[in-house]
View 1 (cartoon, helix red, strand yellow):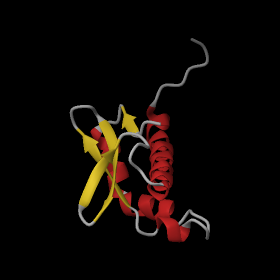
View 2 (view 1 turned 45 degrees about the vertical axis):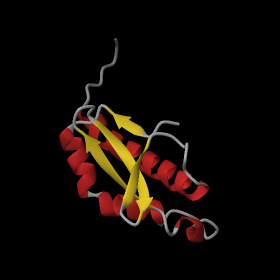
View 3 (view 1 turned 180 degrees about the vertical axis):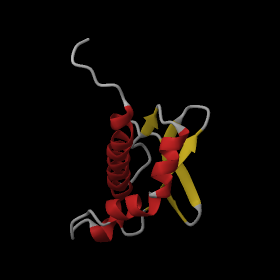
Length: 107
């Protein structure tokens, strides 16, 4: 699975970034009791790529973060957190974009 959100406008990213603390908290607090200790040390964030109009997810600890392009190189706990964050960002981005898009009865 690829973890880049493409076609994101700068204003859309800014809206997501302003809610980053809430987004990451929702992801990290959304795990059951079995997963909570496994994901406790995983740190994630997301950043915007101006050239590609994309959002990338970064994972890491101790100030060493790396861009996640797919599951390669991720341990199980990182993969679960990244997938959850991606899904959360995707849903929030839809909530930002969909009301502004054109809706028609017929094509």
